[in-house]
Image 1: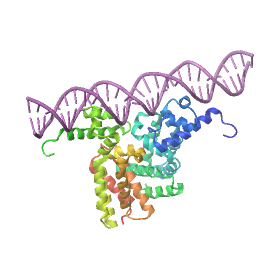
Image 2: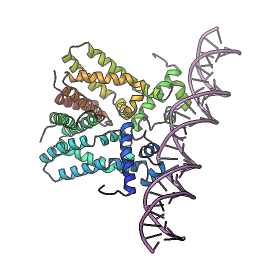
Image 3: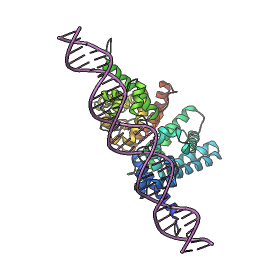
Image 4: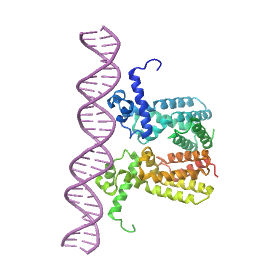
Length: 182
Length: 182
DNA sequence: TTGAAAACTGGCCGATCGGTCAGTCAGGAT
DNA sequence: ATCCTGACTGACCGATCGGCCAGTTTTCAA
């Protein structure tokens, strides 16, 4: 936004911004297009002018986090297993802490996430990441990795009062206790 | 309920049974009273004859788990801290595994749980249990207890393919790694 | 057998949802 | 001055929701 932002992008961005806040506060299902429009200072029709539907708004909200996760997975894919595990643990903690708003949103959407092709890549990347984080093919360690991710995501929910550093430190301790480093 | 069940209780029980299955499969919000009625083999009006509203149906679904949790908290309250922690860990694993259907339902309701006085006691008991499970006033251990509970609940979600024993074993290992026993 | 209470139901209501559509309007190009 | 187009909107739609109520059927004690 150096000089001017085309009206198009400005409105679109504001819609995503407000949608994120509303999804985070009240959940995806409980937030109506009208709510988003009102918060963004435009009409419901405008929201649907910029996005093909409500799921498309959700996809736009999740997009930055999904992109970071995709990058993480791609980076881990090119490393030997032990290093991939270390990288995944470190970077996923940062990712979850930085995008904790998205984590909030995601939790609410999980029950109906299967029917949303818009977020399918994110789910797939999440699955791949779990394997990297386990650092082993041992089913037990795989399960513990899932356990760790669930705990971590849960910890990042509704934790606006905590500083990023505190949250990072906590997750680091928890994951170190929980996961056997390869 | 030795020999026969009065029609009243029979219908009521069937409604709760089917509501549980539907909430678990599709979530609370996505399940309509009509869905529940159809599954239970009665009319929507009958559901509302037995329950004051949709939240009351939810409360009835959660009730058995809520009762067990209340019992757990009451038992832990009368023990010294170290024993309370051991008891809490052991019994909560069993509770979560046995009531994993309820855990599923609960996850979906969390975003709107604040506005539901019907389930407030359950939430309060959950909070108390977290403190017992931490086994210490150290904020770090308290946070780790929350972390552990989140991971455990997440592990119990959508895990119908796993046997109870496998699930219990996994949770036991995870909690032992994660929590410093007092 | 009967009559009242309990159990149950069909039909309806107002509200709200996501989404569509015809049309308004500002402003740049010609 | 004219036209075009991207941005935007108000009005409306069909569907579905939770909930209500008058009325019917079933049950069961007297």
